[in-house]
Amino acid sequence: MQKKIYFENLDASRFFAFLLVFLAHCFISEDEYVKTSDSFNAMYNWGKIGVLGLEYFFVLSSFLISSIILEEKKQRNSFHLKNFLIRRSLRVWPLYFLILLIGFFAITAGNMLQVPVSPLPPWPYLLFFVINFYIIQFGSEFLFFIAILWSISVEEQFYLIWSLFMKFLNLRFDLFCWLLIVISIAFRIYYQDDDSALYFHTVSTLGNFGIGGLLAWGIHSRSKFISIVSAFSRKAVIAIYLILVLSIIFYHQLMEIAAFQPFSRCYFSLLFAYLILDQTMGQNRLFNMGRYQLINYLGKISYGLYCLHGVVVTLMILLLRQSLFKEGLLLSLFVLPLVIFLLSVLLSHLSYRYFEQYFLRLKERFYTFRP
Image (cartoon, rainbow, N blue to C red):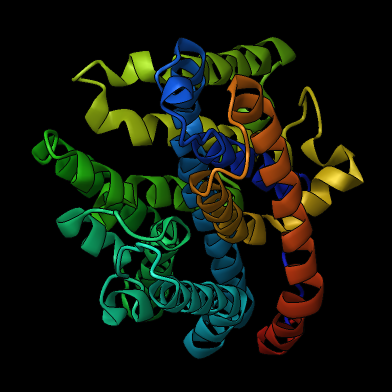
């Protein structure tokens, strides 16, 4: 049986990426006074930096999956496509389809109670993980916790493309990664005025996956460049982290620069790739993200946090529409985000312990080599 590849500190990094996504979704209100207030709008707009959480997830997924496949090919001189796809399915599909089932019951209950609910996209888009293409064409005005699953569709498409390439194509892995980066940038230049395509289209994200793959390839092949970067002085490490933090803080200002937009995903992906490298191999790292057990665990359940926080947000919006709370800035900016976060953690913990772990144990049977 294949020993799982484990990179120290990366579980914790998943949690911090989720927090960015959470910021984009946690500020909600149905009160016109609150929604038009300067304070609410400032927090709501600032929270949109949460898109960077998804950018990180794409890079991290590519890095981890590429590392596993490259190590398997090294040990076995081949790659077991079926086992790989089964492992990915056992990790992603159970909770994904549970969320779809919840969405189906929510629509049914809404119709029975005569509560206005936008219909879901046609089922083929959901079943075959192409909901991002539906959103590009028709928008995302349907159940919030279903709409946010678009990024899982992108990841599933990536898993399929990546695994088929590794199995059947003879092109050098690093060249393939560079090709994806070039295609992504060209696509983003061509569709620069199409916000939906820039954000939701799979081709637009290929740069993230290419950069994550290049990092895995560099570590796997013991690249001299990787050795140099991982040995950066503490001052250089501080400078790079400062650039990362400032880039996140001033994300909106950067995105207002038209010439920057086609390269934005690759720019942030490079910074995130450095973070991954530093947290796994850095000789002069400033801190260890995985130092605290709680943060590690929250990162371990981050898939549940991502999927289930949307359910909690949708429920809170429904309760607000029923005027069950007296709204105000304190409620919308502090109380509700905290309640949504805590409920999301609780649901994700229960999901991980009593639902997902059953499939994760099955997944262990489909590792295919001994290092």
